[in-house]
Image (cartoon, rainbow, N blue to C red):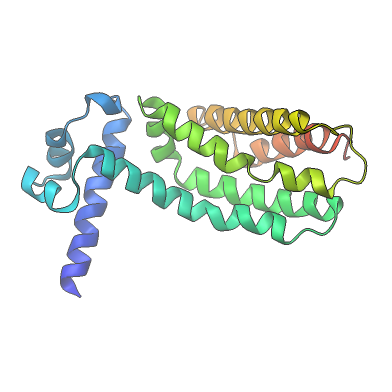
Length: 196
């Protein structure tokens, strides 16, 4: 058990070191020596846990996505009508943005790094999964062509990802302000109705 705790602590130090470095250095310019020095371990210790910096970055991202996945998947599973879906989405959105706020420092680093494109694309794909489900719950919609649904997926996931990116970079905007903005904008975009 002590060895497992030591392994977990060392990996956590290495991950936190990479996150700190991402705040000031582009990922492509970060070296194993930089990460090791920041974590106050030698390079051999780094290589005991990771093959390269890409593996550590992937593990950090995977942990983030595994934390937000249950929130996102419960959204569709608990909705039988469009009204119920709106309520579930609002609750899920608050939970999702709370986790994003908790990981704000990590996300700020990921969004400032050369690996931004990969991370943002992964986040967009994650956030766009449910649009097909939304369309199937609508009783009346102007989206009757497949390409319109696909355009809606792109539009909604890009706008949500862009809003989150902007919020992460601007520390002064409170969580509830962002939640209220997204909720205010989402019904017109997703449901072709205005919810007051």
